[in-house]
Image 1: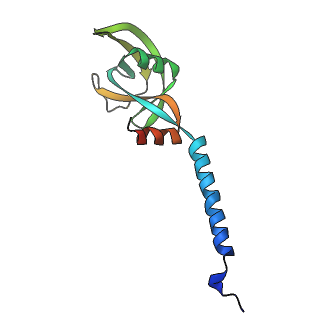
Image 2 (image 1 turned 135 degrees about the vertical axis):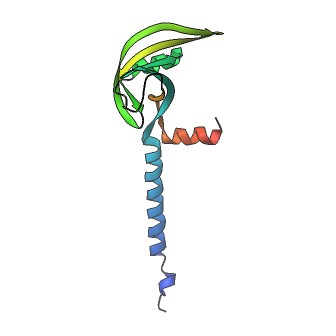
Image 3 (image 1 turned 60 degrees about the vertical axis):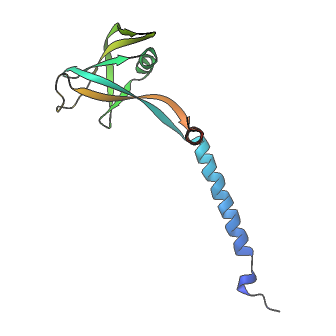
Length: 136
């Protein structure tokens, strides 16, 4: 008796093995690839290329740890000009004022508010999925 084409299962077995290999590669990439978590900080432009940031102690550590920031979707280097120390005390929290020098766009004027992003931690993509599914 002759074997029909629909009775051949070699193609099905090859497809199952191929899909299994693709799933293994996908989970390996989820586990091995890391992405940064960013901290958003609001600042005020004091004068040309000088920005004043009001930070908590944790944010101040992040600022000193990094050398680049993201402003208007552009990565820019910055230098810390002056650390004013404790600026405001509210309850048990202390806020610090730090002046940084970085290149700003021409469209910003003195006393304009600006948002700055700093790299905080690296997370694996699988950990990000766990955080999202956990509802944190």
